Image (tube, rainbow over all chains, first blue to last red; front, side):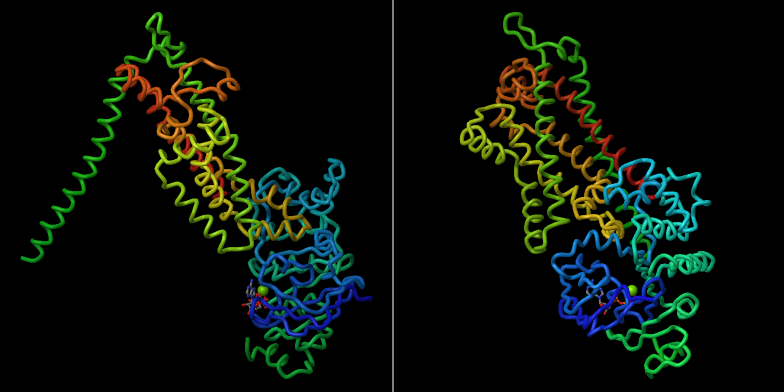
Length: 251
Length: 283
Ligand SMILES: Nc1ncnc2c1ncn2[C@@H]1O[C@H](COP(=O)(O)OP(=O)(O)OP(=O)(O)O)[C@@H](O)[C@H]1O
Ligand SMILES: [Mg+2]
């Protein structure tokens, strides 16, 4: 498997708060990488550096590099909108737009210039199928997306992200607001999706990390403490702090 | 002993409350009823559909109705883009929070200034300095400045109610800033814009002091473009002129009744609009 993203000596500050300290990591293509760690350790922050969602926060300062396909995404020449098209994001709280299911999915493709109705119909159906929600919503595509259940909304958001044909999908605790059944559906979906996409997922649920991820990164206080194959990290952690965390001794 | 005292106190307070509520309600009812009783008998089709003629001694307020309409339209056409644009800039683009705070404070202060001062400044600036003379346009532009803070603030408040998560979702799909604003943020604040407009229309209808200085007293019947460039009385100004200068109290009360009805309608539609959008939000 080749590497699709690499962070080199990445540091991030929110004003005076040093939130990420010299993070180095390589994320392999078409796999699931999980970020774990106690609350406030910088998982979300790091995830957002991968598609420059941090740009939206004025006080943020970043040093170091994040390379995507060999290109530093913080270079001035990078088109942020195109970057975010290729590296999509699913948020902790499902956030469908207050419009129809169809328009939600079509939002991304329309943003990137697709106008043909035929083409959009096709994309909407395919994305909803890929997100395993087509059968549930195919009869009410014109209904407002806010009328769906939380689990459905989250799969809709995944479908919405898939509709722009990204290469990478960043998910920030996508199941933390969902019930167990919705959660397991999203986990199955993630495993299915990694055939075609690279997935990076933040989770507080260590069973979830074990169930679905190939590699796991453990963060603590803004530092990447340990990173490796999930099985190995959970069975034979090399760092004492990792061991303490995964055995539930703190956090 | 003490509890008796307390009871008496409670009863007294309650009575005072009922009294003041009743008094307020009675005052409103009296005012409305008085205006309607004095005014409605004088409202006739002829009054509404003709212009005044000194030769036949007829009085008609059609020109004043039209002038009011022109002023409302002209004001809204300027104030909506300006107010909404300023609101978008302040909430979505401006980086300097201190400056934003200052502008918001200034806007709040601006809306508390007596309207006659706007009239004075409008007269000097629009009528004389910019050379618009006394005209509906000069009047409208004065009202634009008067209503700008209202439209801006109501739009801003509703922009702030659009959840950040919508914006994040759109940015995450690779939408640029302007697209996010246009497709996700603005649709969410339509209600604020509409509320601002309705409030402004109400204020424009009721405004007289600022227009006395800037728009004049004429009762000529004009089309909209001709009308905007010539002087003309709005309904409120006409009311003043008829009552104060011509002693036509019947006509004045008729206009008052019309204005009152319009105000009631506007308040009603404001309530309906906010109810409609509150329902939509809950969904
Ligand atoms: N917008 C912000 N402004 C200032 N500080 C922030 C901001 N967002 C996060 N932080 C700080 O950065 C640190 C890392 O936060 P982050 O949200 O990345 O943690 P996390 O690991 O995702 O936590 P959680 O598991 O609770 O989601 C925290 O100390 C937090 O207080
Ligand atoms: Mg987080």
